Length: 549
Image (tube, rainbow, N blue to C red):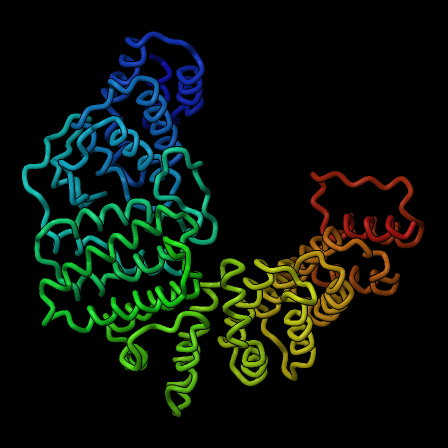
């Protein structure tokens, strides 16, 4: 077929041909033999294995090929064979990239159609699997002759990727991915994040064997921390799988209890702490709680200087974790008298709050811990790193909870006052993050007048910097679209000062500056702005002036 021929060529491939073929297969009532023939032609193409196995290949091309494979196997399940599995595992990188999400869904379809995936447990993936499964240049590969050892599989698990995933855990990811839409993750590079939908079944298959397990290596690589992070997932099945893995781990700890007494105590400490919360099963921890436990494991297993001893003291102080308000977190602020140690502990503490603030339950934890006064003191007395961490925490908080009188409104007002009265000049990074905080505020009338006044103060003080000016205009457009009483918040002098800042910083073009000046002098009649014009200030200016009419 020409669609396959031109879609898989190495130079200048025509992705559109594969896309059209996929849509035709999906909607048309075609004969079974044609579906099978299409799959055979695809798998037999000389570039097929290169596209599947080469990580430097064009990702759009690989994505279209995988989407076609998924459509074909769903249309005609008889195509599926156990010999296909090794190539898919070798092509799979266990990440949250679009390509890997599609690959995992294909493997799910194979398992759902009684293809014995157990032949390949414990699972290997990516470059680690290529030599093991002896995949060469075609879809049909040798089956597994020898099972990889537990230690071998653990050595393939990258600590750096697990840390990235734990810090930005995909709380909406489901364990059963059959009907889940492909997600475009934008917070961090998805190709560097480990997919929990693959990680938990893989770890479960690893622990289900009676092979001896190195608990130290398991914890040092971040495996236990990742499992604990899964307890904050919104998906019940994901949390159930995480608790299942913890149960399997407990049996391994019990088998060699003398060597693993410390980690056995940690498991009991966590289990009792979760039980004391009296949550509906399977218990869902807030992400701050889950991240606190996960980071504790990483610190103790990797012997992080300063942090490890504090974690051990917290663990051994009582038989159960106090997770309700996580008072243990505050221990890190009083753990040492030396300034250097205090700074280290405080940043560890703030990083958990920054990365863990993801939902209203996390907002409740922050509120119950009564931390805001501490944030204001540290903002006033700390250094730039501390201020940036606090601004990140505040931005995440404003994003998840409305800025009303009973919500984050008082926090927002107090932060604006603290920044306005800060005696020194703030860095560009701090100002940009402050603008993001303003963009994350809800459209509550409780906050509208102070938010606009604060934006005006920041913009007129720092807006001559081009980076700040660009972000400032973006924030202004956000505020104008959000608040209803916008016409009351700006007078003509304010608008002229804003235009002057934009002109001085060279972010407003001469054309836009001329139109803005004309509007301010002669009114808005006859002025039309199209989305393609890409003006920074003119759209907000017109909305403000129209609201006065």
